Amino acid sequence: MQPLRIALTKGRLEKSTVALLEQTGMDCSQLRDKGRRLILPVGDGSLQAVLAKAADVITYVEHGVCDMGVVGKDTIMENGSRFFEILDLGFGRCGFALAAPKGSDFYGGYRVKTVATKYPNVARRFFEGKQMDVRIIKIEGSVELAPLLGLSDGIVDIVETGATLRENGLEVIERVADVSARLIVNAASLKLRKREIEALAARLEREIKKGEQ
Ligand code: PRP
Image (cartoon, rainbow, N blue to C red; front, side, top):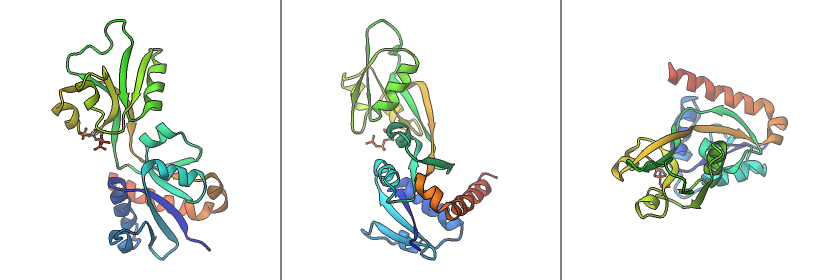
């Protein structure tokens, strides 16, 4: 039988996932010593990890070339979910927020406001929910720059510690959504390999619960 394939979001979420897998007793030595390899065996070889960028984790799981994935709720909210989200992994906690230059009264006045963001779908839905007309500009990173340079009135972005906002003279106007890492599963895999997937999810959940105590 082919190993179950799990796509991990490279970087911080990858490190937390490896730590969690190790807590369940799985050998992650290859993942820890991966060099430039992108596909690595985990544990007794019944699991195989694939390292990818967040949005690509979703693509690989949606297309079924990976059975499962670990990805942030932020990426899920932006890219949609044609897969099952079966577990909140509890790490990678942060949030989406609307932020603007300190004291700028974002909601004041009648002029249509401009918002810069890496997450245009999340931002659009947020303002639609308020029935507020805004112009959204897509930015690829360091979104905080946009209002500082006068490109936008505000931003919708990830806030973790709040340091980036603070150090750049911005403040949270409103919290948009909570974010954390999620375990996602391809729909066909969940039918065909239900027992193995549920067993792995249960092992992970047990360790998460232990950590919460
Ligand atoms: C994220 C996010 C904020 C920052 C928030 O950026 O977009 O800029 O972290 O973290 P803080 O509240 O703890 O300061 P990231 O480091 O991923 O880089 P990017 O902006 O270039 O995408």
